[in-house]
Image 1 (cartoon, one colour):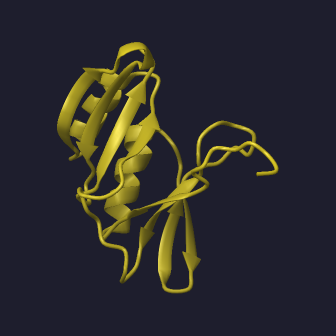
Image 2 (spheres, rainbow, N blue to C red):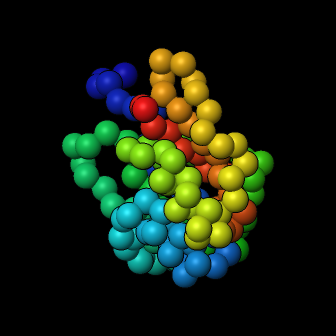
Length: 125
């Protein structure tokens, strides 16, 4: 390997109702998603800072994009876990695992988004 990097370079969260999903993610994570189109797929891109930590990604809607709570689990970093959990609940998300300590690594929670995808939250404190 020529240069060190994080192994995850991109993520896609499948959705069936782009407007509903976009509203959920923009509200819960206080970001603006940018609409895009790629062949037979509608996308809503998460903001990206090239030199910042974390992986870029998007919401994606298309025939082969099926939401599921059984697949890969993506964790979103949040500075305030409790308020993010509350905001997700207030915006039709479902809490599967409330604030849970993971030792020296902080705290996590697991939610279902409005599309039925399982997502994780992580905070250092």
